[in-house]
Image 1: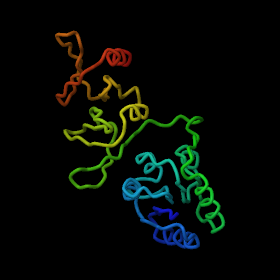
Image 2: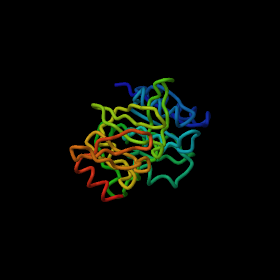
Image 3: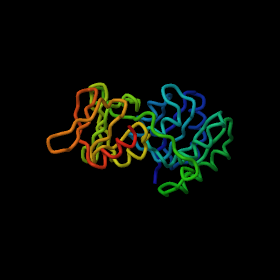
Image 4: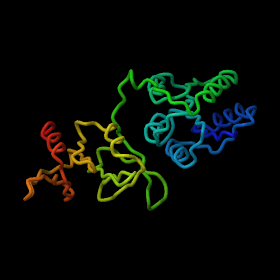
Length: 241
């Protein structure tokens, strides 16, 4: 079976070296290259390559941010000159962490490990090191067809729509294929509260609570939106406000 690979590095010589190291492996095809983190994230999302060779220090997004934003958790080998990010890399389920400069035999060993682990579930280090709450999300831009990086603090509220979530920010709606329960677990509970089975609100965007004639509550947002609040959602709000 042919494996597709993405090479992401802002140095042309580094990308060329990786191609040379891959040349003896006839079953691997370089499907794309990227010289910045945002293009790498786009390629991972669109092409879904089996293997990703990822530098850490890149323009627009770092390699760590690429993994955090795309949710990619398998087939990733970091190739970097910086050793201080190794713990975070393995927490994000990286297969290996190659420190530049590395030789063909070290590269081949990492590649062999990646082949063995493809498709296997791995716990990583996230049971030992608590993952950081999301700071940014990667969402499709309907106007340009590219991807946007959306800062978490800029999101007013999040709404579940079938198997998607809609991020509401600055008067715009951005859809992403993700379940709201999965997203809720990644957010900072001190800043974002799930007030209803279909809604998560940013407390910084909350203006107040309104009581309805039926003794239910609505969250009145600063953007004018009114969001239903369930009983359990009301209890969560009382606990943090």
